[in-house]
Figure (cartoon, rainbow, N blue to C red):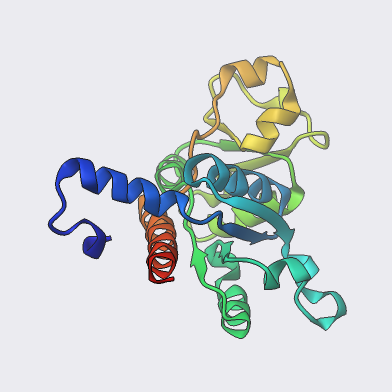
Length: 217
């Protein structure tokens, strides 16, 4: 990005950045282990970064002992720290860039602050994400106060009025127009600032390289 903008006047810089974000239609594959993150991560990549996105359950990586074709056609692999080593190995084998994103860092810090003093509720769509949350907070003081409920499986009315409660984006869609949905808002965005920087750096670099290659033809 520095090479693109150095010495440019403001209008030219804005035009250059715009072209650097629109030269290529990039395709990302999100690899995760639960429906909640396979919903929220692709949604943010499409909405905020203009990427074409395919969601792939990590379990699909083991089929037939080889990566699904969609991975071999990807411009970028995206996952979270839980699957970092596996996806880094896969990205290296495929020769495909990868970004490991961190999510909801402010939210998780706030939950960690609350847990020692009170129960905190997470409403999710996939039991696998509920289990993942318990692993995430296992070393946190007050981890026994973490309450996870699965839409369609647990009784959501059991959540006390006024209790700190968080819904994943997919859970919010699935609970429908209920008092719980009206009372609680999900996180509008889930990527950390550092993850956003990594993604934007990749997009600008890929588009800038493509733009340069076109000019040389």
